[in-house]
Length: 194
Image 1 (cartoon, rainbow, N blue to C red):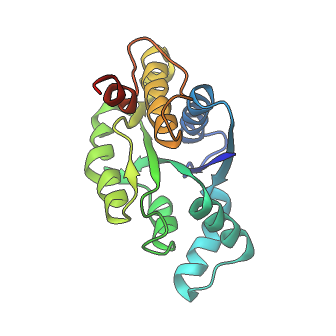
Image 2 (cartoon, rainbow, N blue to C red):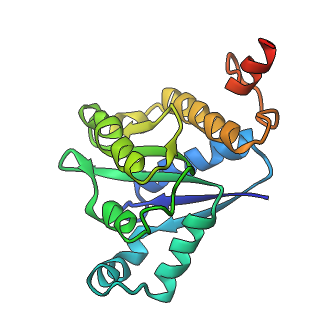
């Protein structure tokens, strides 16, 4: 069974960050029905992450979260935007991972913020972080501003597209991905040209 770790760095409960993470996970589940989703709320691990950064030793709960992320087939990572970048808690969690732990792992990235002005955080903060960790972010990243939640039609479309892209990367042949209007997995386009 394919497993996806969902790392969400929202600080409140409920949080728009967790809502976006759930929306992205649901989009992958629609496109790749036989998938196991494991959610990691970094809010619950904040003290453990800090202690690990100071001592170099993870608590049992943090070790479980790290193992979940490193052994998953794919990753969904969502952070709130603070001061035009990802949150410190989000960055601290990825700082405690071994530098090669995400090597080649497909990642769907997302972020939430108050206004659309912060959407560039996806390309100027999150993509470089995951490039450094040698992960492989899918083409579509999803940013959700407060206004997106009032009428989520466009947000749903972006989440669906990103979910299909991650599902396609996780599917060995690209054929298990549920079709949607206009979306054709890249592998299918290649086969059609043969």
